[in-house]
Amino acid sequence: MARNKYDIDETLQSEFSFEQLKRLYAYIKPHRKEMLITILLMITSSALGMFTPKILMKIMDVYIPNKDINGIIRISLVLLLINFIVVVFLRLKIQITTKLGQTIIHEIRSDIFNHLQELPFSYYDDRPHGKIQVRVVNYVNSLSDLLSNGIVNTITELFSLFFIVGFMLSINIRLTLVCMLGLPALMTLIFVIKKKQRVAWQISSNKSSNLNAYIAESINGIRVTQSFVREQENIKIFNSLSSNYSSAWMNAVKYNFLLWPAIDNISTLTTSAVYFLGVSWISQEIPGITVGVLIAFTGYIGRFWAPVNTLASFYNSLLTAISYLERIFETIDEPVLVKDIPDAVEMPPIKGDVEFKDVCFSYEDGIRILNQVSFRAKQGESFAIVGPTGAGKTTIINLISRFYNLDSGQILIDGVDISQVTIKSLRKQMGVMLQDSFIFSGTIIDNIRYGNMEATDEQVIFAAKTVCAHDFIMELENGYYTEVNERGSRLSAGQRQLISFARALLADPKILILDEATSSIDTETEILLQEGLTKLLANRTSFIIAHRLSTIKNSSCILYVDKGIIQEMGNHETLMKQKGYYHELFVSQYDFLNKEAVNS
Ligand SMILES: Nc1ncnc2c1ncn2[C@@H]1O[C@H](COP(=O)(O)OP(=O)(O)OP(=O)(O)O)[C@@H](O)[C@H]1O
Image 1 (cartoon, rainbow, N blue to C red):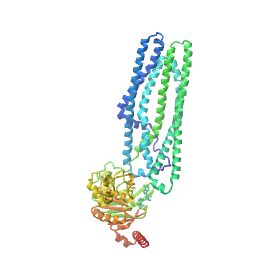
Image 2 (cartoon, rainbow, N blue to C red):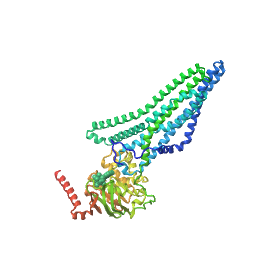
Image 3 (tube, helix red, strand yellow):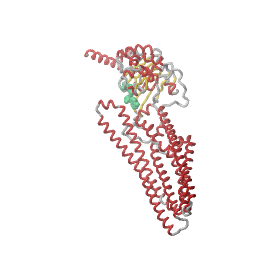
Image 4 (cartoon, rainbow, N blue to C red):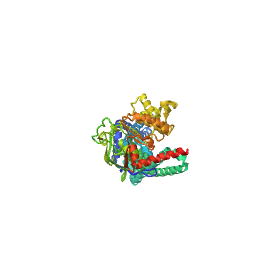
């Protein structure tokens, strides 16, 4: 899909089909026993409730004219028992359906979240994270009512309708037909608004997604917002997105509100017709119509329209839910573009030979980022990648971990094509420190241990000491057990880098990838760190991206990359003698630092 932004509505990749309802049923199926029990409870209580008007008819037509007080008491006790059973069953139903709804929702949500864990970087590159979040939380929540009450109520009400019509027919066929006269009008209305209603709910879900995307973006960017005093502009954008969502929601809900009044009016009209015709048929002494019959019948009319109302509201919530279901299944169906090939093998223990063979790569179709990149790093060598901003350095190292698929060419580790091995077995053996040193909420020790969940405390501390993080960690109030927030907002940028660095080392990888690992670290710490690193890198192949050339001078090989092409390759001395791009970059950086020193 094309890149999406908070103010661009997402288009659906696939149209809704009833297949999606079938898929929803797949979630319900394992719980059909509980569902069935609830439906039986409800049908029983609804069937019992059906007797009330008939009992009243008997009281009016038999017991009162015969002044049978004992009969009235007996029958009242029966009524009381019926009511008691109905209340108990209703309570049981609420308990079961609420639990059931939440269980199914949890299962759907887990499926989305599990799938999100597998989706490649490219999926996250293409859309605002708020739009992903809204699917996992809000859209799934929106199914809650449908799953907990909707389905059970609807099936129950269908049965009720069946019973009611049966009872009504058993009392009087003519009056039943009068009562049903309103149904064709209702069906026509439903048919006319169906498509508009569905589209309206789709638009509303798009607008809510846009709003969420913007809120998430604003929270992440709040520091920049406040630094550039952009609060008012942000509020304006928020207000506009929020009012778009409100209008879309109002427009969608308008269709829902069309149904209830329509049902109300139709039921009032048919009830009046039943009264009018009933009374005139009684006065004409048409056989089979008595006062008791009319009273019982009007009791059933009320009950006839209640399930119709429930069915219509189920239909409404189904249409609403479908607009969310489409998005939910779209996420679950999102293809995992970077995945194991069918007969992928485990990556054997890595020794550290890395070779790029004519690698071509693009993030977006038609925009080539890497062009015929070829190089070979032998086991234990340290490779530095330098070059201007946007040259393709990070892209190169992202490909070693197979975060993206290549357009063409091969990447071989110890002679094994990495596209042929399982991704897990490959990534498990690498230590990667990405440019964004992400810190998770939790303790410092947990954050470092993220690199190797089996590492002992001693191993964690050793890694921290190697990257010179130990001292600052010990100064925090609870040392390694100090809690940090998501993104590590209470730590400095350099401290965050050191923690990510320790995390990458902890995996004891044969291949270590460091993207701007030391860019925020002061020179003094960096010199100390270099000493530790030199020892540490001894038996590992490493790829280091650094803008400060002093840090990579001693690398076995330096790749100078520009516009996705390796322009120069060799060690520091060779490249300096070549007097090419690297020489120019090194001299300009040296000059710059000298000027700075002179001026200060
Ligand atoms: N996720 C992405 N989707 C599309 N294009 C991207 C993506 N990431 C990077 N690019 C583009 O690919 C090119 C290379 O980016 P890369 O991050 O590899 O550069 P770099 O050399 O590491 O730059 P820097 O030194 O600034 O980190 C750039 O033109 C960038 O705009």
